[in-house]
Image (cartoon, rainbow, N blue to C red; front, side, top):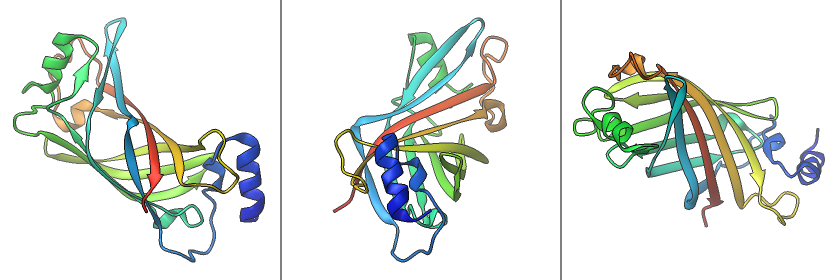
Length: 196
């Protein structure tokens, strides 16, 4: 599919995930910055029959995206553990405490992509995540959308959604394992804008 046809399809669907197509890398990847007002780094895990949800603030982010050659794209993000919140006070305190994320000793979570490729209607993002000083591989699935009213091919302002999961026990965050689930589901929604 040509880029012209791909972008026409994007306009018709209102989604830009289909522009992650293989092609010759003719230009350097484009830098994007996160817009804090449109960005949430959300997580959820089981708490008996209920669910604990919460968010991490973003300390820094470096995004370089190449929609014609996804393999040249890179994503680096640092999250603030100390200011994380959860759906009720005890969960927030426990999350940051020594038995889970130990924010006093490990105040940040970092993610660095190692491989990005087009997959389905989006992109598969493989990378290394470091939690409590332990680094493990994780896979996220990304989808991109244009903002309402943008012209076909206008990629200056995009929404990106990244979803995936990890096991907190892999990082030694094992506190309250009799009450709280091991799987942590990630749901990241970000508004990104091309750097000028």
